Image (tube, rainbow, N blue to C red):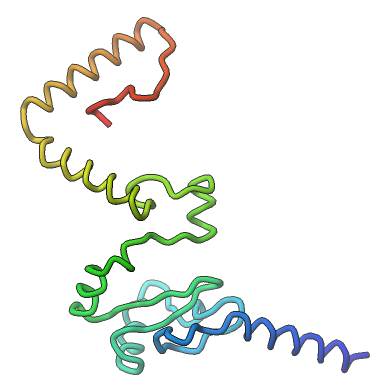
Length: 167
């Protein structure tokens, strides 16, 4: 009976390890534990010390895991710049925590990816460049005044399209 239980536990653990193994092209890194990954090897407050040690052992690109998420850490500036210029690295993380905080969607400029991110970025850059000009400041002040008057009147207002320039 005990042998059967031990065999079952070992089989389940081996099956889990086989399913969660690293992809063939994943960079080298410290060996993760089942379920928690490398969390136990990441010191609080002094993570850079562990990264420095790992970069000397595994190279400038290190593969880690935290629970069910695979992480690629890059430690040299040349490699970081090269990676940030590639389109493959433009996406944002899509994990349980992010989806839970965003009601199942990747919302906003910080969490969006692809075409949504590109159009949000273009709009933001355009608005930031024009923001310092007096005409934008006056238009925003006018919008705020109109909004304040609407609030004072007690009128129910739909929020869609309410903030043309101030948003």
